[in-house]
Image (cartoon, rainbow, N blue to C red):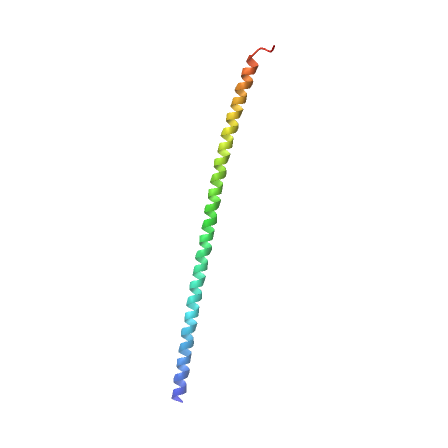
Length: 86
């Protein structure tokens, strides 16, 4: 009877140890998934920031080109208005 109780106690202890190990490894997997998700979010945010910066630079460049062309056209039209018509 004493042997059966000892064996039963050892089985319960072993199963508790196995359950603790499973819980620990599952916890580690959850932490890794959280870190991957956080890294993906940061990567997406950085990608969007780079895209917005590129668009901002393109917009500024286009505005400069348009203003430059507009001022050239204005100068040309003013020069043409100053010339007498033949």
